Image (cartoon, rainbow, N blue to C red; front, side, top):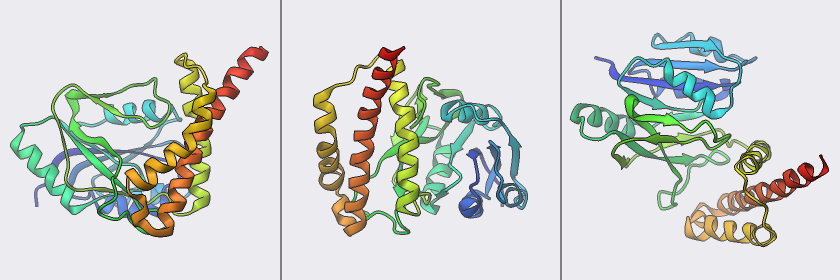
Length: 254
């Protein structure tokens, strides 16, 4: 079987619990570039089991910076980004093959299906979507984004029909820990961009985000997991605003 003419790039740090499944989902691709920032688990051992995988070390440069460096190592005209806890669905793989063959568009905006506490979202839940597959010459990262980095595409993008499955939110503890870390980075990013804290937003952001997540994005279809997930999402939104106040307060003390 001919390899898919596409480079996959992944940044990792202790992704051993999921990485084998991730790499199995892209074993038909021409090359997989892994940029690791200091794993102490079996990440390297897993990567070395796959013939199409190259793994190397890079000190952490931030989410956008690290992915930009991994992207620069890719040799194919088409590239796909996965995280070390994500799995490419068979349906999306076929969509990628079709896009490469037809050569009409520049990127796919891909739904991310969060497998929260071991269960995927209902097919009727509205999923977040990001550009993950794109023509390498048309995409780049905004290095000012400290978290939730997005590929900026100078060209035509189309929404994909199939998902990338995200397995990293394996427990409530893990999700809350990530949100605590991400909210630090997001608040710092907002502060550095000159955004001022708002008391009204601080008060309203949590209930508004919960209603958006639970009802508008239809997380209620995921049972009690959907309720818990929406509550955590709402608290994450609150933390970002609260920590922006904290950044402003610390500035005034200097």
